[in-house]
Image (cartoon, one colour):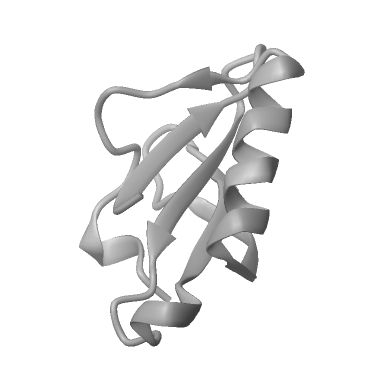
Length: 82
């Protein structure tokens, strides 16, 4: 998993899953950012988590079973990085 995006059924909240490139190969970690897009403004980033890859993949699958859909294009760019 390099990067992936999920959006809720109401098209309001977005999760971004992206790999920590500095983590050890044997202990891969993933950042998870949760936020929402605001019309005419920068994205509102509300939460960041740092999980092991297996826990992040489990959350990804769980969110999809709850109705979250995968985004094909990134919702925000490098300007939104904290």
